[in-house]
Structure formats: structure tokens, C-alpha cells
Amino acid sequence: MKWTTGLLAALGLVLTACAQEQGHGDNVQAKAFVDYMVAEHNFNRDELQALIQESRRKESILKVIKRPAEKAKPWREYRKVFLTDARIRGGVDFWDKNSDVLKAAEEKYGVPPEMIVAVIGVETRYGGNMGHYRVIDALTTLAFNYPRRAKFFTKELEDYLLLTRDEKIDPLSLKGSYAGAMGFGQFMPSSYRNFAVDFNGDGRVDIWTDTEDAIGSVANYFVEHGWKPGEPIAVITQPLPNADMTIVNDNLEPQWTIGELEAKGFPTTAQVTKDMPANVFSLDTQDGQQYWIGLNNFYTITRYNHSRLYAMAVYELGQEIIKARGGRS
Image (tube, rainbow, N blue to C red; front, side, top):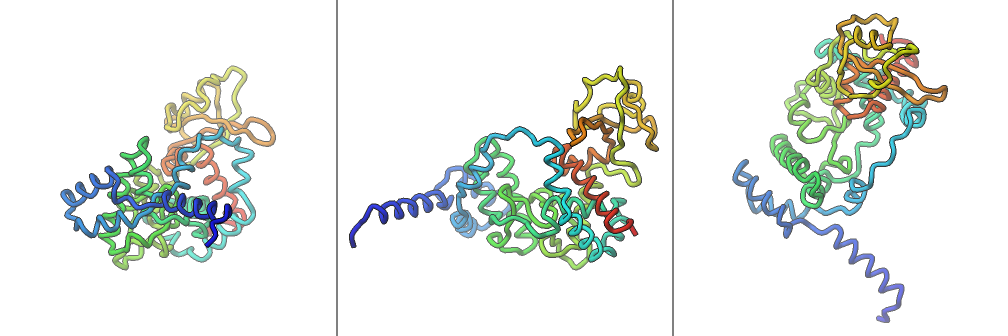
């Protein structure tokens, strides 16, 4: 065979790809992890070593997670990503198909259907995009090759192996996001183990193919993170000329009360009580700055994803889905 420049270049690309997707069998952190799982959780050493070797280091995952965080999009741009006609129509369809389950979840957990539907819509477009990476590859790549957050992802890998053993799932079979989030609601393994529920009572907790379990799990996550049934999420405010603007966007967790915000120049005509925990935040809209008061349930949404824009996208998508359905019933 004549080794042309083109062939040599192609071979180089293949070898590079192989090197980037090597197994983790010789990784020091991986060996220590195997020792820990054998001692702490009685895993079979040979089987676990073979699994870790079968996992692949994904350079694409490391590139994504190491990428410097870009300046956050203004709300007017962020909103366009999630408040689309297609996502609203998809929400109506998902709600209609799962109305009985959503009603049952609301009755048990007190989380309204539009919030559950909107979270699933924002996370995976109602199950249409649950991620394409093998979860084992995502978690081993980040646990053993990303020192800055190795502790977090090593714990998630531990939880992943425990959940797949408990649920009798092949750990090589599940796919998810580049960070290892899974299912309709994109639960990390620790969230699955702590908050996912068998909502249909079939003896399995399936957030990948079972919409009943996925719906119940999102509702349970909200409740376990402080959701207050029947309370509002966010209300509009118009700052007075003497308003204390230094407290705008000061924290995700409520630092004030409605009464204190009113005293600081942020009144609201909404049906809220003065003792409700609250914060004030701003959104950059097409028509200029808009100011909102985020209440306890708004903060709960940020516990799902630590972002005001994310929480507002979920809230507004839920409201738009209600409008498109012609109501909640």
C-alpha cells in the first residue's frame, strides 16, 4: 500500500479519536473509585473494572464543560428559545395526553399541571430530546478527567451505579445529557435516587419511558424543594422613583418580604400577603426593563436550575400553554 499524505492524515484522525475515547481502566482516579465501590457497596471488582474500561472518555464533553461561560443572554433573547409556537403546541398535546396523571399529581403534591408540563417542555421538549451521550461515558469522563468538579461527578457516578443495580438496568444502556442528566425531566442520578417516584405503582421508577413516573417525579422534586401549593410564583412590580435599586437581582433565595419590598419602593397590586418571602428581579424585554417580584415558588423553580431566566421561562411557558388550551380544565 502506498502511504499518501491523505491516508496518513486520515489515520492520524482515527488514532486521535481513539485516544480521545479511550477507556478509563488505567486512570488512577478510576482505580480508586473501583476500590471504594467494592468496599463500600460490595460491587464485584472484575465486573466493575470491565464496566469502567468499557466507558469512554469523551473529549466533546470536556470541551463543552470547560468552555468559558458566555455572557448570559438577555431575557428578550432567552425567551425566544423556549416560548415558541412549537413548544407551546407540544405542551398542549402532552397535557391532553396525560391529563389524568397530571390531575393526580396535582391532587397528591399540589403542583399545578402547567408547571410540570413546562419543566418537561423546557428540559427535553416533552421527551423529544433526552440527550445522546451514554450516561456512563458522561459521568466517568467528568469524574476522572475534570478535576474542578470531580467530587460532584464522582458522587453522581456512584449514585448512577447504585440506581442501575437497584433497578436492574444495564448501566451501558442509558443515554442523557453531557452532564449525565436523564429522562423526561433530566434528573441527575442523585436526584433520581432522592426524588424520583413510582407514580403508577408498577414496582419500577422509570423516568425514561414512563410519563406517569416522570410527571410524579417532577412534582415530588418541587415539593421536596419547598413548593407551596396555591401560592403565586411571581408578580409584576413598578419601582417607585425612590426605590432602592441596589436590591434588584441580589439573590435567588428570597431575602425580603412583600412588605419590606413595598417599603423599599417595589409595590404590587397582586393578591399577596405582606409576610410572604420575596425578592425583586429585572428582565430585559423588547420594551425595556421589566421588574418582577419572585416569591417562594419562583425560588423553588430555580432549585431545578439555578437561573432566574430558566424559572421565568418555565413560568411563562406554563401560562402560554394554559392560554393555548383555553384553560386548565
